[in-house]
Amino acid sequence: MARALEPQRRLLAVYTGGTIGMRSEQGVLVPGSGLAAVLRSLPMFHDEEYARACGLPEDTLVLPPAIPDQRVIYTVLECQPLFDSSDMTITEWVQIAQTIERHYGQYDGFVVIHGTDTMAFAASVLSFVLENLQKTVILTGAQVPIHALWNDSRENLLGALLMAGQYVIPEVCLFFQNQLFRGNRVTKVDSRRFAAFCSPHLPPLAVMGTDVTINWELVRKARGKAQLVVHSSMERDVGLLRLYPGIPAALVRAFLQPPLKGVVMETFGSGNGPTKPDLLRELRAAAERGLIILNCSHCLQGAVTSDYAAGMAMAGAGIVSGFDMTSEAALAKLSYVLGHPGLTPDDRKEEADAIREALVPSLACAAAHAGDLEVLQALGDLGSDLSLESFNGQTPLHAAARGGQPGAVTMLLRRGVDVDPRDEDGLSPLLLAVKGRHRGVIELLRAAGACLSLQELEDAGTELCRLAARADLEGLQSWWQAGADLSSPGYDGRSALLVAEAAGNLEVVTFLQNLKGGAGVQAPGPATL
Ligand code: ASN
Image (tube, rainbow, N blue to C red):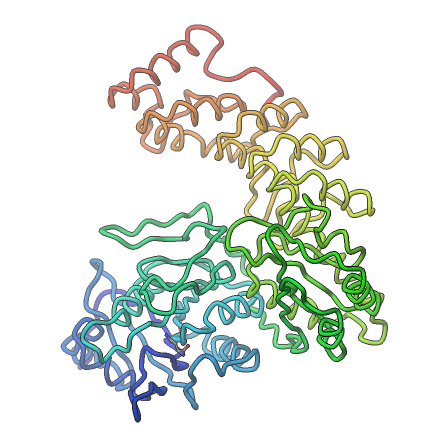
């Protein structure tokens, strides 16, 4: 009879193909079926004794114990047909999303086993198609098949299963070589080394080493109890055009013809391109027809700015900056925005304007975060509302505070934006500035009347103790400057001063004692709510 055992977390592993399960046929690698059977034969992927004791069905595998009192049980769903990911398209990625939707209630998390060649596109598309995720979705794959003696398949798949099985990271992620990345921030950078992916503008959400370190501050928070929504109406008529020195205007004209509705244009450096009049004329004409052109840089690092006369912003209306988006993410975003129901296909020009308007909040946030005053100014002058929220509920002021950009904060405050908006997670710009230790920004926000909320002040005690234990004087000073009471107790009732004394952090002790003896442990300034 089946034993009642420790709590179980159930995962669905959707196997779509890729090198991980490939076999050699006539000297070349082709997708291979039967991955579940291979996993069943490997003790690191299946504890047969437990499965039998538990009476698990045939198609269900169970990992050996990783942490006490919890087991990760998983079912491998093998897609038909299996793909080399070079053959995958938006159609297959929407089907994966629909599979997740169909099984959403039965499982606690999802792993998508995918080829690496287009995994960054897949992760980007899935991140837009799957809205309101409350559960972890992790894509993974490998550079060397699981049958090979020396391979990265086992480590990657096991890591993905453990991460999805043990943590709720409610977004589309990509796990590779011990790192968990945000799916729409990655790009494939190596076809041979095991470190195949990088995330040039966002640190990993988690790193697996001796311990698992999760960067919870970066992890998206689930929105209340909102239902999962699958956006299957992604626009297919989007393209990617890479500019190169001397690219003929005629070639660009041919590329930009209908039915193309949107194009990601990869430009040089910080968003520059040839300034030949005939080329610019083609771009302008296409934008006038209603084609959306999103400007992304060839470069891995750095964003699209308006620093140069050769900047594509100079080409005139219609070219939207993609800032620091990867081309993969930009293409997925275009496809999502253009496929969004409610935009009338008859009026291309109006539709284009509406789409540009829809892109404004995230563009303004990106500009505020990078301190790009020119772009912010330009957006403001065009009549864009600079207090609009982007996808995660953050306003440009949040972004400027997070990026430590006093110039952008000043500009936004002058334009009259709300000084204390809350994002989806209830965070304020002031709290983000405190976390980033951006003292100049804290000062500006305080002067404009920003206050930490009652909840933020209540939660501060434990954080203050943590900073005191680490001798993080700057962190403590930031909280003080923001109006926190530095004598607030942590979760165990001890104050930051007691913690600093116990840890022998003299500099911190002196700072806290001085506050106590002199100005008081609470900073002067606007009253805290
Ligand atoms: N061509 C393979 C694929 O993308 C490459 C891999 O998975 N490493 O399916």
